[in-house]
Length: 73
Image 1 (cartoon, one colour):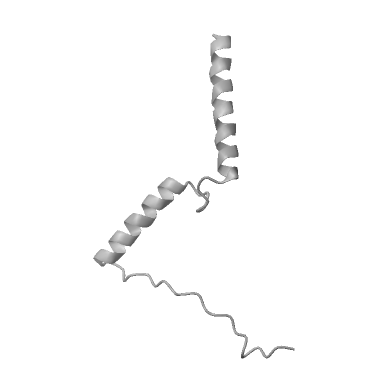
Image 2 (spheres, helix red, strand yellow):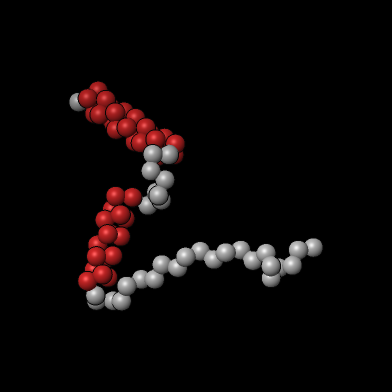
């Protein structure tokens, strides 16, 4: 059995947040809010298969709605 003290996993680097009210904090908050607006809560997986499936479903729903409105009027 391995000795746990010798086989310790390395720690991840810590990313400390800037102090509140500083210019660095303002820049950090602005950058993160822009990332949140562009991300739409899908995570950092840009261009993945799930994104393409969701986009295709939205496009099909929009096209079906437009065709439905044209037929009904």
